[in-house]
Image: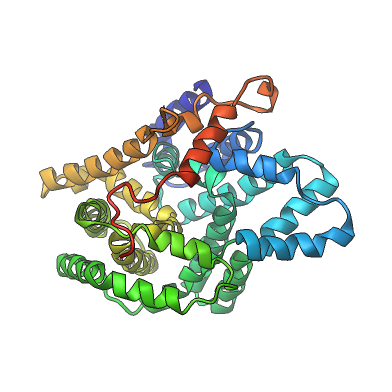
Length: 405
């Protein structure tokens, strides 16, 4: 717990000292240190995170003989939907270091360097954004849970940045690399299309809500059609069906709509009026915003595709830090509405940590608290594996979902 408290206090102090200043050597050095701090926390953890518990055990089964590599890689694709990049990373780390900690460190290095690079490009409130990255749960999600997907997200994030600077080939190359780690990276192919949509307005938000609601109504038919036409041999078919089975009931729809089509979309709407941005930055914000909104429309109807929102997470953190960081300007009009929007953001961040796993009678935050490092290998973290098993084996038709009919 202490290491997390140090990070929170450090980013709060640095935000107060530097976020309203232009770039300086002191600010850059502390920013790099903050990134390094997170890399070390994530890279040298021991058993922190549910998926980490699974990957640690899975690492023991990574072959050491070169003749077994092809079977291992191909088998992972068709039996567990593990794309080749992840399998190759594990093989290399097993061969060179014979330690899963090397996998953790490499993943953490890639993910956090890319995220901190994008934060610095799009907001001067870098330490506030770094703070939100930690307390919103995305640091834990990307570094201890969806590790394969997080590498894909990092690649896509850099690719999007270069796409909006005219390097379209670079974007598609990075999409290809991302697909080597997680199939969900296909959602990035929507990014070029969303650039055709105008900036978010109140009318666009209302229209998005209506479209999502209609999609929610007809989604059963759409999903059944897709499932019936997916060959059994298609990589990830079982997982797609599993996600589709988490279709929201009416309460689930309105809960997600409140969080994303009202809460986050509202923050984006008000934050876009902040001053001090270049014309190019404004253009980028508009493109990111419409990409987020397009995915949110799908997710509010079918929460099983919730992971697609991970590809917009960095932008959500950046825009929220801009919204909060410019609070003096933000609160001049519609003050109550804007305070409510921030409360929605923090409420759902807290809800992620406080979620209860009933079969093991533990809260979600216990996957990460207390922090255990490689020096704490004597501490039993088996209960985190039990929590992971509860998460993947329990009936998915909870959390406001209605299932396929």
